[in-house]
Length: 309
Image (tube, rainbow, N blue to C red; front, top):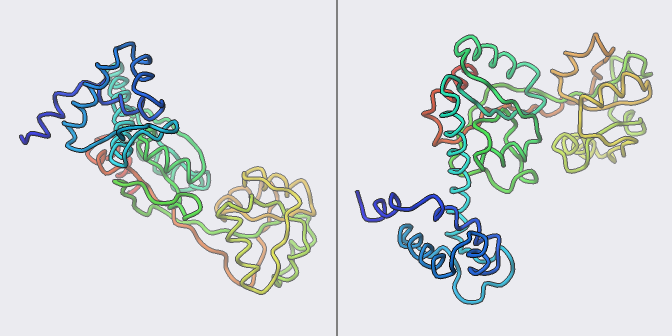
């Protein structure tokens, strides 16, 4: 064992979490007050922490604005420590309920049409002892929670640049499915029965669409721009394609854009009709993503196997 590894093993949990207190406060004195210790004790613990890591973690001299006290190395270390804290909490829960395996799984709503329900059915058959906590959220928040250690795995699209500046370090993912977007109308819409529908005919229609920053909205706008047309402005803006499908079912003048799998699922119950378009809308791959460090977990391994089947 090298010297740095030996020093890491000698650190206490409170010392490891000290960086979080330093990042949130403007002085070591405030950190000492928060931890109910003396300032020299904080300074000594910080010195031991930096010696163990072999690099300066906290800026010296004037600390400046709140949260500005960590060096880039300190910021990187703090991020991984927050993940480690979540793992410790998960370990505590596992110890309190040793007969139950817990899996925290985040999903994008469109993944709930097809790939996720089938995989979870296989998982329950193979490992009935696993209890799944399911969280539906946006692409950006799912990947952020995965990066922070709050989720064990996610089924989602890969984020585009406006959703996440960069993919989390140490995260692997594999394609598990695909879906495409379609224009859709209620059965009573005047355009519902047309076999051919020029894109220009859709410009002046009443649309319910996601907000401009959403991936689906960008695909929608790009299709019109690519044809030399001005994208329609929606009469209703809504982020939930579930809500949008229900809206067009009850409002015969509205159109929307939604995943083809969701439209297919609700065609009969809501009376929906996918509209023909001159060019096919973009398809999106659904991936299963997880932290590389957790790959050896038997619970995560069972989930990966369930998707691979």
